[in-house]
Image (cartoon, rainbow, N blue to C red; front, side, top):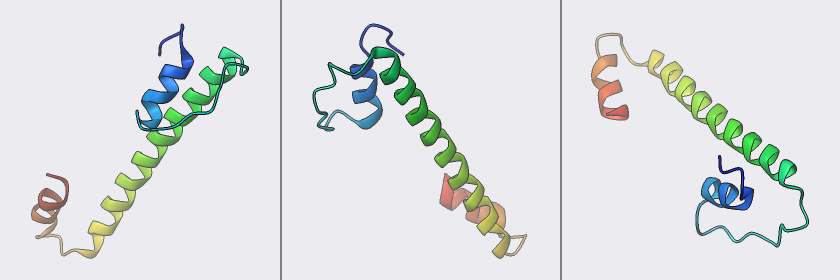
Length: 74
């Protein structure tokens, strides 16, 4: 995380195409906290999606799971 410019950190997390309002009046610590929460939410979402995908593989017969897992996840 860049301690000098939290708006750049936020832009990186949201993508360069994100149009942000003027955040100059928002304290840097609040922006840092927000970026940290956003990163945690993305991390949690990735983990939940991975868990969900693994759980759904239980519907596939055991002998086919390795092949299906390779096709789905590379």
